[in-house]
Image (cartoon, rainbow, N blue to C red; front, side, top):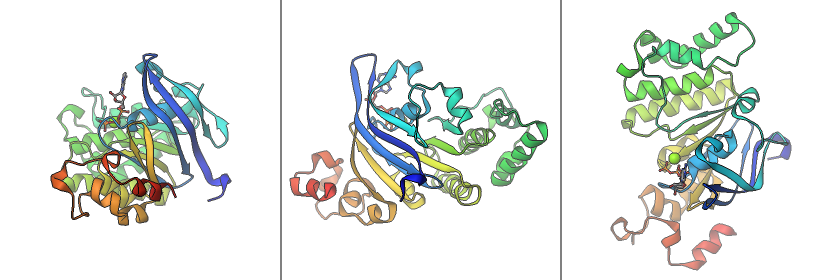
Length: 275
Ligand SMILES: Nc1ncnc2c1ncn2[C@@H]1O[C@H](COP(=O)(O)OP(=O)(O)OP(=O)(O)O)[C@@H](O)[C@H]1O
Ligand SMILES: [Mg+2]
């Protein structure tokens, strides 16, 4: 991958909340243009914090990037505001599907177009496009979001982000709380948007299995540090990933009481990831 293709370059960032809580301890990752990159890891690993650092949503959480740099196409972006990030085509879809409960699906979608300056016709065309990707949303367009299903709300949250015509979507935990076949449906749409519209995704997911099936490249975060990264296909085949994250490998899993790489006894194993 040549440097020219790198859309997002996160370089050794440290993030601290409330001036004292050190959460990210030197995280580096790269997202090439037009790809889907997955950021995986368990509860509290720092996935959401990483996405917030990129989209500049840390300030409202009393958090700050205290070391390292974040570049979008070579431009430093740590000091930009959220709306300046939106103007550069970077949008975050927050964890837990934040739809406006009292608005209809269509009204929710339209709130995503507030930064557009290219006229009503262009916005209407995007809305049509969103409906072709999410036919369920079209069916539910006049329903109040509060009365739609979890899957529909997740679709609405992604659709709203698409209304801004983004280059890159930071998608936080899209599988959360959804039934397996709905998760599958959401990921299929993400993949479609990626291949047909060229939208780049940085995807935070605890669901390693789904994330690795739909992404090109993955990073595994543990306790604020990247412990492993690689092409999705090779991570899927990796014995340690199978054992700790996919729950499919390793004869000595020990009833699931060793859930992290950190707990792995073998130092050699670690060396192998770093090699
Ligand atoms: N606003 C905040 N203030 C203080 N600490 C925070 C804040 N947000 C997150 N943290 C802490 O930072 C750590 C990383 O949290 P983060 O939400 O980034 O993890 P995550 O990987 O997204 O986890 P999950 O899978 O549960 O969403 C956790 O220990 C969490 O308690
Ligand atoms: Mg999270």
